[in-house]
Every structure is written in structure tokens, then in C-alpha cells.
Image 1 (cartoon, rainbow, N blue to C red):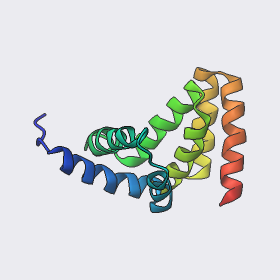
Image 2: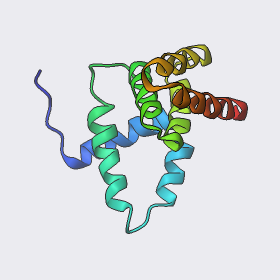
Image 3: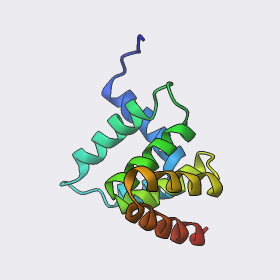
Length: 129
């Protein structure tokens, strides 16, 4: 597969567009407002690489990427990121019923305690909506 080579600025701009679409303008604006000299390079990195390179690839749609991310976050116990990506999954077209099934499936491969925590987080996230 041949990919077009983008400049760092083009990757950043593409990443910011995708990041805003998936996470919401409010979330990205809040993250940028908390940007410091310490975190500036990291924010640039995740915008260019995670969002501009990986999330922008044509091989999976955003729903599928959300399924993969939610599953991985459950497996690794990244609870703060899980809440954020549950919201993103809804924005990407997943339903609450589908997320329930993703968490239940994760119980088999990632463990019941991981799924139990994920269900608690999902319940909190969906209660906010």
C-alpha cells in the first residue's frame, strides 16, 4: 500500500480534525487549555501520530477503531481513557447495546474484574448523557 507523505503540519492538521470529530471540540479545547511547557510535545505527538497517522488510516472505519480501543483500554486497565473512549465510541456510531457486548466479550479475554470495572465506568458515562 502506497501512502502519501504528509508534512508534520499536515499530519497535525489532519490529526486535529479527526481528534475533534472523535472526542469533541469541548474535550480537545479542554486538553489544549491545559497544555503546558511540559506536555506540549506530547500533545503535538498524539495529535500527529495517534490521530493524524493511525486514526486517519483508511483500513478501518472509526466504529471499528473504537471497538479496538475500548477493548484494549479494558484489557490494560486504563480507566480514565476508557471513559473518554466510551463517549467517543458513541460519537463514532456504537450503541450502548454494542458497548455492553464489547465489555462482556472483554470479560472472557481480559478478566471479570476488568469487565466489572468497565461496566461501572460505562454506567457512569452513560448516566451523564
